[in-house]
Amino acid sequence: MAVRAASKIEQVLLDSHLALIKNSVGSRMFRTLIARVNGKRQDILRKGDLSCAFFASSVLAIPRLIRSAHLTVDGTIKDMRQHGWRRIRRVRLGAVLVWEKQNGHKHIGFYVGNRRAVSTSSTKRIVHRHHWTFDGKRKIIGMYWHKKFSKGR
Image (cartoon, rainbow, N blue to C red; front, top):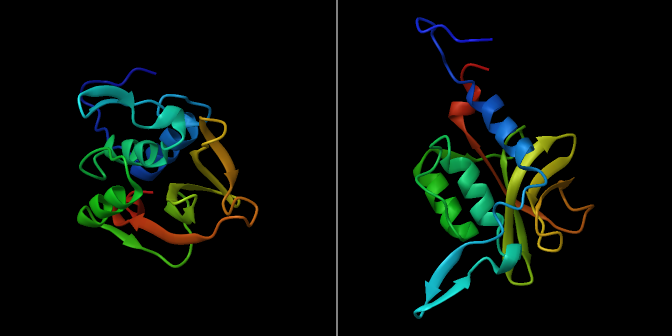
């Protein structure tokens, strides 16, 4: 269906956010980022081992819900707070989830309903859908929501 030039187009932000997350499942796009470290080129995401913050922040940066993509969970959360994200007590569809540290690192992803989440897998090295608590193996330490998602639904 073609959109006429005189049509009023208004993005449905939450639905677009959920589509972006769900369409990322299976992607290997977020597993590599080449940087110079002490003058030497290297993959600082270690082939997807450390890619969750890069994935989550990229998804949030595309519709400008944060300033830019980040390489750490803490950097992503700081940017989220500066751009209107607030902690919530009850999970909501599209919420950002933060899990406790495991192997020295926090983990970040998105709630997509039915006790399922989408985040990166350090073993599969892709974006994948999984149980929101990793079948009870990982505790959620933070849930975040943006008020813009409540408008126009």
